[in-house]
Length: 180
Ligand SMILES: [Zn+2]
Image 1 (tube, rainbow, N blue to C red):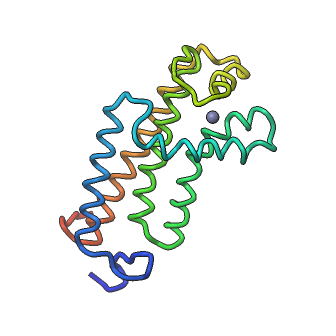
Image 2: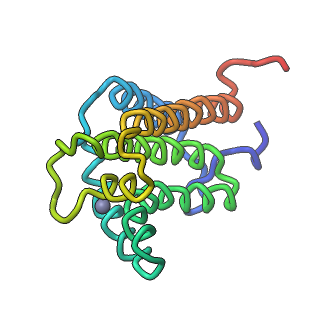
């Protein structure tokens, strides 16, 4: 492996060899747990929630629709800033890992979208974002379908992030030779 191909951490030092495999194992546990859990309040929800609430404020100047959409949109956009920043630093392994965060956030949103018709989820207060949004669009009766679509978008984002991270780590460490 060339010196220039070694993974560098934030201080410009190469990551220890055990770090990428450990991160991949944790990412796989996270991925499987997320995809097989029907819990709308998974542990990561507590990470998404403050970002979601900040999003309502960020999008406040852009009208009522964007104000209600802003929470969900921002909790998905926020990790994408990290993806972009890692890509700019050419840390593609870390960029791929952030796709799991984006996908997890989409799945977190999907439960909220799907709940727009039934409105059974306990809210921290205020109005149900997706009941308002889908109501404005006259699409409340499609809540289950749209929630399902969002879930699949999240699941595919997480899966592709994991597969990319695995391929990049393998390319850098040379565990298994893949012939093109
Ligand atoms: Zn909200």
